[in-house]
Image: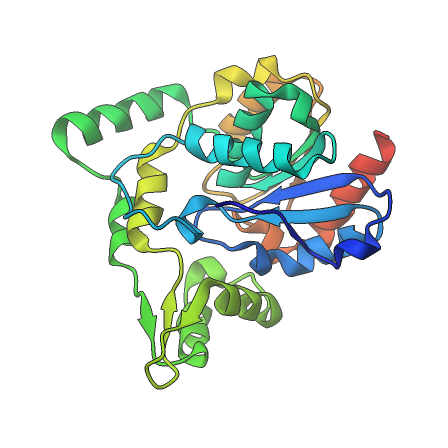
Length: 278
């Protein structure tokens, strides 16, 4: 089951505010070390792994993101630490939103980093194509066909280092992703991807459209988006501002992986927002 994991030893938390980080599709919490460690001086920072990292069930074709939100609700309830500051990247941002909508008393404030705010029209068209005609988006096909096995951690690092989406990520952060996202499979040092491509594809197919629900959010909310994000562009940002006039929306140079590309800048914005809204 999903468990809270402290970024630092829980004995060091004292009475610091309770902060929970929810990760993106396929990116384990430890990949965000450079983002989360700077927050530990002011907050009791915990992470969670979504169910593709721990479920024994085979990846389904479709699974509502409400399931991930329900997992998170149970995890935060069991922690018995009071309402959480939710920080989420991409899928994790939307799961945080769904938690906040379902159980607002469990969330005190939100920081959404390049959340997947799918326009309703695009979402509806995609659902029709997928469910009626069996047609997948290119990103779904790409996820299913991605390499799952490498000769070593080094060969995995070399593979990702050559790919455009990781071009803005430092070597140190990329190593965090490689070590956290792969596990040795016992075959002469070879490693395998922990989050299966079939799960990644399932997540893409199942993405909800929550932009119409943003107006229901009452918690103080901060948004951080990449200027060149291919997930939340200018139109989505404008719709976000329209739905949540009080959102504090920040833009940083970078793409959808902005918390990995600019972890310290993101951490600074998170600290500034939270300390100002105390």
